[in-house]
Structures are given as structure tokens and as C-alpha cells.
Length: 161
Length: 115
Image 1 (cartoon, rainbow over the protein chains, first blue to last red):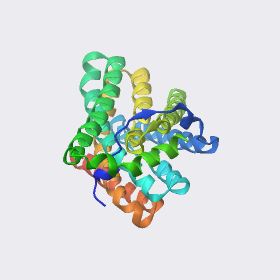
Image 2 (image 1 turned 180 degrees about the vertical axis):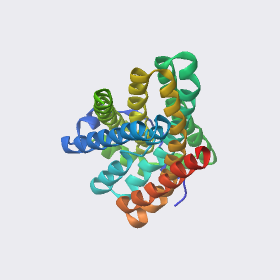
Image 3 (image 1 turned 45 degrees about the vertical axis):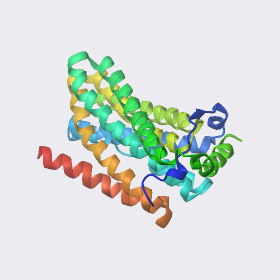
Image 4 (image 1 turned 120 degrees about the horizontal axis):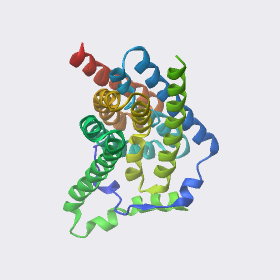
């Protein structure tokens, strides 16, 4: 499996509040438990070993394994693999978050530093996504692209049905 | 001691709530590949840094961010490895291997840099 397959790069980015309401309460509780557990471990390491070592756990893939497992059970392995591909870009954004937080918090204060770091995460992750999408879509610009993306639209319809 | 317990509980609650918030946002977004960005959202990081900044000030929060840089490198390794493994061995086994890679890259890199 290639990291970026052109036929799977769906063009339309959108939001559907109805899809968020479909998440089962049990799945949300699992995610909450994972998040709370990893945060607790991060805090304990900070207390017992040191704040810098505790920082390691702030970028532990806390909910990704749970999310991938749930997606595999409820959708398919391919669906889970697609979600993971997005997480590669999100993880690159996470490095930008950490870099900005490390540099800016001592200079501009915690509030400004954390907000700027959050924006850096969003800008880097979405910037990588749209850059790669533009790159992989370019060779298909001669008319074949719209037909090849039919499968992607099918998945999008299924998610928003 | 009491302060440590309070900060740990606050960080746990904030981390859990932010994880759920980003999960809801990711579920509402499409296509799936774009929504996947939110699987690596800084939910626990925001909770951890906010609590560190409020409880200890700017310097501890900045130090935590240094450690987080290594964790983020491990996260990239996790995601890159898990992607081709899922169709072959399933999400659970792939994630277990991914966690191994995270430990190798994040903890290994941290120990190399600071020990």
C-alpha cells in the first residue's frame, strides 16, 4: 500500500453535525477513558521523573489505537487505514505544536504560547493535507480524475447518510 | 502532595474532555482522510500544558513541550508504520507494533538527547 493513493484522495472537505451525533455513548466513554488515563500517566511521570519526561506522554497516540479499532470493527480495515493516513499529517502538526509551545511560552506567556501552538498544529496539518492533495491530484487534471474518485464520494455519502 | 493530586485529577478530566471534543469534530468532518488529522489533535497536549502553566508557570510548560517534541516524532513513526500494517494484521496488532515504534523513537530519542 502506497502512503498516498491518488484514487482515494477525495476532493471535498466538509462538516456534517449529524455524523457527530451518530457516535455511540459507549465509544465516547472509551475515548474519554483513554484520554484521562494517558493524561494521568503524563502527570504522574511529570511528578515522579520530571516535567520534561512527562512531556513525552503529551504526544502519545492516546486515542488513535482505540479509534482505529472502532473503525475497523464498524467499517473496514481500509477505512481505518485511511484514518491513520490523516493522522500522519496530524502528527507532523503535533511536532509544530510542540516546537511553537517550547519557543513561545517563555517569551509570550502560557496563554499566547498555547493558543499559537494550537494554530500551528492546525495550520501545519491542514497545510500538509491540502499541499499533498494538490500534488497527487495534479497528474489527474486531464479529465480522468473526476471519474476515478467515484469510490471516495461513495464513502462520503455513506458517512453522511 | 495535595497539589499533585489536584493537578493530576484536573489534567485527567481536561484530557478526557478534549479527546472527546476532538473525536466529535473528527467524526463530523469528511472525507475520512481529512478527519484523520484530528486523530492526532493536541488534545492531551493542550490539557497538559494548560495545567502545567497554571500550576507551575511558563517555564515548566516550556520544558514539557521539549519532551513533547520527541513524543511527536514517535507519533509520526507510529502512524507511518500502522498504515500499511492494518490491512495485513488488523488495527489491534498494528497499533501494538506502532506503540513499540513510538517507545523506540520517542523514549529512545529522549534518552539519547538528555541522558
